[in-house]
Length: 202
Image 1: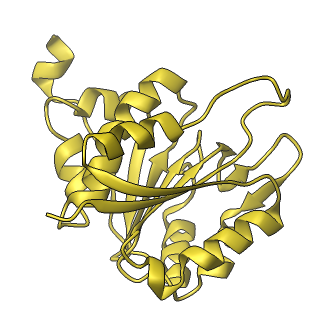
Image 2: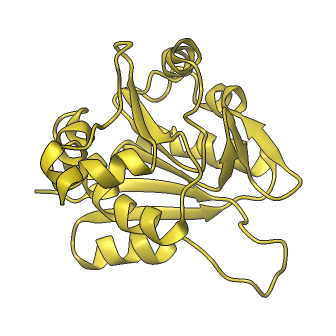
Image 3: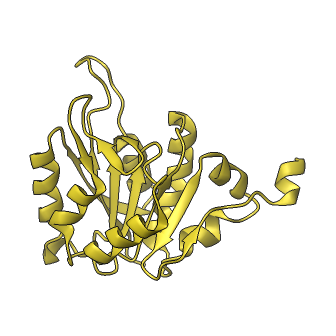
């Protein structure tokens, strides 16, 4: 089976140049395990994210069908730096009608705490099959462990609801729910995990 492709745009997490922190080690781990191929780009301005998203939408990158947005966030908004942000509408614009069958993951705190209708508008504009992410603030290490599994599923599952099936299982549902994980589909359906009784009792 061909490894799934992930395209990642990562914001600048820290104010100070000597601070480190990146999702790239997670991508490298999955690549070394033979699970994914990836492209990673740093972005710090609205123009940069618009440029790279426009490039990703080209037909030559169709195999990179997972879009991973790694940056700080708040409901409906992504922070590229401590001074530059973009709304989901700004993300949708360069992708308008160009994301058929693609799966989008916002690895950003609280971005998915957004109304169903606005998420559906975003999916309608982009043409993406689904979008997922967090409705709460998340802790780095927990999120990194979670998205190692999530990215593998998004990249390799033949079903758009593969993340729902895997992360709603007894093994993963408690962590998924604690992170406020949420999925919205182009069909209009949304999904949130519910911890299994056995997991809650453990």
